[in-house]
Image (cartoon, rainbow, N blue to C red):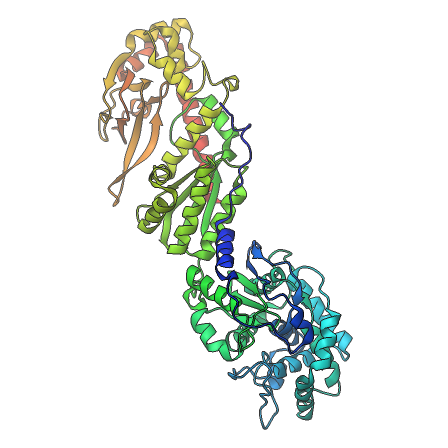
Length: 639
């Protein structure tokens, strides 16, 4: 048998990246639109370049296609430079120079207030040139240095200007010069107007790639902090202002339809880039140079529409801030099943604890939530071989999230990694999709247990079975080997020391106990003791297994308190304090037990006090082990 230590590392494909790949394939054959030619350098772009990047606020990057192909940022620079202007001047000073009203006009429209000369908003060229003029610095070099520094913090690497594109823009930017002179005429720009225009041309010529834009969008989504470097790129106070103008003006005369269909603040550029932001969740970037008549990337719009539709990313669908989807993550070293095992087994299982990972989920599962779950599980592969996902506190799972989780389960199962979903009775859509994706057999195994407790026991059993014989769970240890030994017992006293209650007793002690041991057999499902029954003895399982259960109020379900395997004892508390039984114990399968009556146990105090002390010491050790286990689990649950 291949042991866990010998098993090769498992690599699980990412469902989100695979979805982006399918999306890329879907629109790669779309050849609508034309590459921008009014700036000569832009006309050199390959019209078939196509990349998609999705970056979460936790710093996870998903990308497909030509995401590392450099191009110039163009108008996508506008909201980020607007943020720099806000930092350098404050909100009130910027609003005196630049409005925030959408125009419905093209990006190069001359939309100035006829009285004040104020540009309508910072997303059209007039407003963007004015915003660049508000960036700290008198000269073009001072302003572009400030902008490059800010953009570098957004991206997480040093940025630079494409000098060829800058010269091309400067040589052909006559309309922008006309706008600049009009802004100077109204004192929106000062004497450094042409320096500001030069900086604006340079700003639009900053080299980026699709991954960079995804990171910039995610930084805005993350309140102005780069999710990978953790460096602040812009003061968080101005994030709502940046997102506001992106929502109302970022897509020019397509802005209204964009908000209606996609619902994420966005900005496009004539080099073929589009960025979109889902606040608090993620940023999306698409690069494809073919533009529609409005100057927006054709493929970029289609990809964003499909992403928003498929993953329900419309910002007005996520108004309520959710608690973290992973309420708690534990390992098998922190929590174990309620199956009672030998002390050696307990020690081995704690040592292998990280092989089992338990994720407790909560709230609603949508794309942003399930992305966190998928990433956490995929990152845990290698450290853990068994995954338990508790859905007890999941109130809703939308269809995309169900598909994504089901895809991950299928891939784990295909790689022989065990994964169990528990407490999914109310998630009928998830169960149905899981069966469709993974198949009836795999889904049945994945959904085989209705609680973390039972799933944990299954993982523990698999761990113990995987150990080589030299691990030493033979004569004095493992549950399966102990079960086999006790099942073949020939009623010899030598086998009594298999029990935790009789641990350390000598032959003389065992010979005293032998006449006291009453044997009883219980068929599967039989009640061995019931709640309220008087104490009739201490039970020791010699074959089979039995579980102690207690009813959970208002649910109609029983919760397992413990399962007793061969060698384990139960019923001792009631014998010690003579209180009625507090739990029901039933046979999980055909079970044989030895029973020591209360009278016989009491008689040991008079006739064999040393033996009784040994038994009481063993009982104390049993109680101590159970208390330590409870303390570990309580401490883990408090984290």
